[in-house]
Each structure stands twice: as C-alpha cells, then as structure tokens.
Image (cartoon, rainbow, N blue to C red; front, side, top):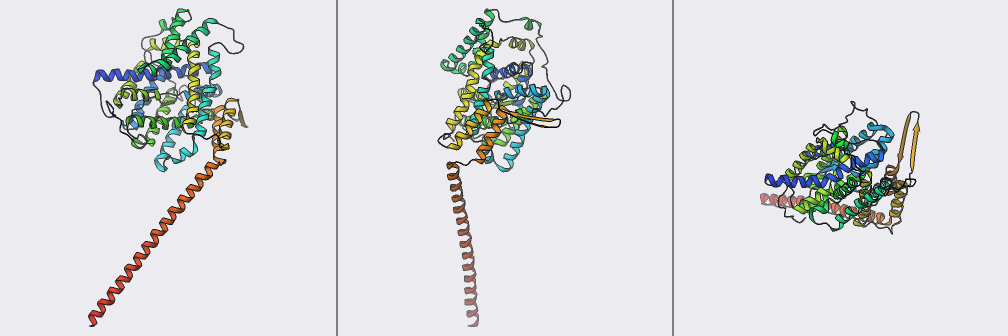
Length: 476
C-alpha cells in the first residue's frame, strides 16, 4: 500500500484552535445524516421512536468506545445508520419500543460475535457468506423500500390532496441538494443534504409553514429522553428477525469504509488495529446506543471524506468531535428547532437520499464486477429484489409464538441460501483451481518428506561406512 502523506497523522494533535475547527468540521459532516435518521424513523412509524438528542449523544459515546477498542489507531466517526430506518420502524410497529431497542442491541452483540470469530479463525468465511451479489441487492432494497415514504412526504402519494406549498418546498430542497452535490467545491460538497434541508427550511418559514412555539417553550439545556431496558420497557424478542439481517449489510459497509480509509491514510486498518477490533468497537457502540434508546451506529463515509480532503487523520480530533456531539445533545433549544422542520423539506431531500442509497447498492455490483452473464448471479439478485420490494412475508405461528419474516430480512435470507446452494461455472472453476492448488501443495509436501527420508538414509549409510573404515584401521 502506498504511503499517504497526511498533514496530521493518526497519533498527531494539531494546535488547539485548529483542532476545534477540524472537530466541528467532522461534526457538520456527520450531523445532517445523524439527525435525519430519527426524523425519518419517526415519520415511517407515525410516532416518536427515536429522538435527535439521544442520537447525537449515542453517536458521540459510540465513537469514543470505538476509539478505545481500536487503541486510537483508526480515525473513524460513528453515526446513525440509514440501513436500519425501515427495520426499526417495522420492529416498533410490531413490538413497540422494546422490540426496536432489543433488535438494535442484538445487532451490536452480533458484531461482537463476528469480531471474536474473526479473531479466532480469520475473515475468509465472512467474504464467502456475503459476496457482492448478495450485498448489492440488499443495499438497493433498503433505498428503494423507503421510496414510498419520500413520495408521501412531498404530497404526491395517491389519494393525497394537492398542496402547492408542500410541493414547492420539496422541489427547492431537492434542487438545492442536487446542485450542491454536483457543483459545490471543498467542504460544502460533503454536506449537500444539510444545505438542502437548510434551504427548504428557510422557504418553509417564508411561506408560514413553521410553528416556532416548541422552540420558545424549550429549555436551553435539557437532558435527552434516554430509554433504558427494565425501566422504560421490557426486552422483547418478537421483532428480532426484522432488524438482525440488516447487520449483514452494515458488516460489509464497515469493511468497505475501513478499506477506503486505509487507502487514504496509507495504513492497512484491516490488519492494524485489525478487523476484529474495529468490529468490536462498532458492535459495542451499537449495543450502548440501543441500551440508551438511540439508533444503531455505523462507520460514516462522510467523515472518511473529510479525512481525505483535509489530510488530517488525527484520532484526537475525531474524539473532540465526539465530545462536541454529546454536548449538543443537551442543548434543548437546538433540538426544538430541528423538530420544526416540515415533512416537505425532508421529503425533497429524501428523494435524492433514498435513491443515493439504492445507487450505492448498484455501485457494489459494478465495483466488484459481478458477472450477470452467469445465471446464478441473475437468480440471486432478481429473487432478492422481487422478494424485498414486493411485500413478501413468511409467518410462523405455534401456540402463542408468532414469527414473521418479511421484506429485506426475507430477501437477505433467501439471497444467502441461494448463493450457497447454487453453483455457477465460475464457482466450479474456482473449486477446480482450489483442488489443483491443494494437489500441488500435497505433492510438494510428499516430495519434501521423501527427500528428507533419503537424506536420513544417506546419513545412516555414511555413518555405517565410516564405522567400517575405523574398524579396519584398528585391526591393522
């Protein structure tokens, strides 16, 4: 791997003033996406499931946990994961806040289990279980599955009365986001969604669509509404299958982000601090988030972009940004302002955001050169897309126990099974090559063993011959 000349490397600490500015830059990079997750989950569920202050606080705490687990050797920021928006809303609908938070904590524990397995037996098994042909469609289903929510928010769903203000605000939010994403330079280019929301919000205020009363009523400092098990809810496993399969997607996202960051900073993070440590940090961060009532965490590509653009890989700067996020979570007025953002603004931004998620799934297929001339790949991908987007569900009822697997969860399970049981021509070629490699290795081992034995025999003969000579000399 090529060495990347960083202005400030992982172990470095920039001057205090510069560190504060750089930390706020990381905070802004993660901010738009992190606060958007609870907003969208609540919109999808129709009730308050997550809160922005808790999302910010758990994001900061999670990042500090990650830094601790990786021995401060990986400049990664953890924020709210978009992959869990629909599953969390579905889990809440099925089993309440207990079902949603139990699922998030289970995801964190699954990460920890995978980290332990990687520590013990390596990571090859994970790559075989989750190849690109499975991961790509899973990511696409996440984005496309959210599409109806965005259409509803901008007032274009079937049966919705037309409101020109709602549509106008949505169009402004959409166009500004698209313009910034394609035309902006430097720092602004990595926060297009935040700028789009700000532009849409200003237009909403001008059109009289925003009620500022909640802001006036809010306190300047307020303790976030943490939700903890056994105090606010009971552990509920009924909706576990709704959330847990999504961890398969975010596991691959985790590996991809760390590989990308490794190329930027010129250090192989998969080896040092190691994938086992990075997954452990991510898993414990997600578990703690669920424990406090926050969304699942994930590595943020936005912050990876900041590292690449600024050439600042200082983990101390990342840690400072995490501390700032925790502090902001306790600012009540700020949270109240965010809560007044109209759905039309979020819908306009989400048109791009959800499509962006789906396109990322397509990019996974392209980047890994998945060959759709292979019938196996067509079967796996097409089956997953139809099942995930078609509303398929399997319900198992036994007495009082009821288990429903639907949407992306069902698609993920079907995709993994099909990928394992169907063998393509490429699989057969790889198997034959592997067999040939094992044959050659065995042949070399036998050859070495035979040569070793021959050398031992020659050695014995030489000793025997020498002893004979010595005996003749003594007789003489």
